Image (cartoon, rainbow, N blue to C red; front, side):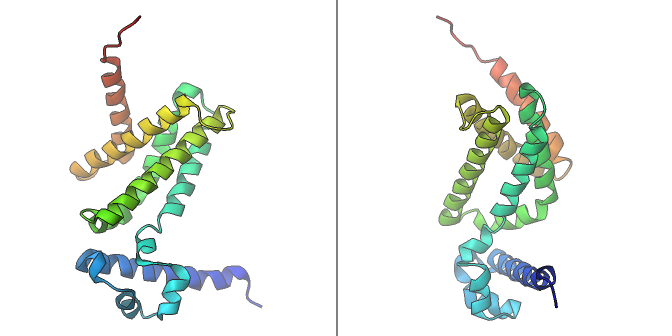
Length: 200
């Protein structure tokens, strides 16, 4: 009798094929111009199969979220046992390495999302969810049940650093995203150090 693993592999392969086919169609023809029927025809699957894996076309575009959240969790685990002042750089470095491995996926999805207001709004929601997960993980590393102001600030800074690092990395046409994230964090520290803070 075949095990669950042997049955799951064809399902995952089919899901991946549907996802890749849909993303390519969205990129080449425009998200709003492509129907579920178009995707099914190109992927050679029935509409019922599409809906078994994805509830909507939009869910295809954001199917990466679970994998990215899991990768952020692994990055937080990597930074869990380092000193507090070293934790954020370690977490950002680990997560940047994952993002670099996903550069083709990110580039394809960005071409679909940019210029599409509804998809852009959903992208911002995903980023806020990632920021919340980062804040919660940083708080847990310090033994806190919920994020305090320091964890919220660190998480906001972390997502900002990653966003700017990705932009710089793409503008340079390659190199290391991990290095770009590290350089962006250093630059941010320099900016903060240069800010005048009035005392009482």
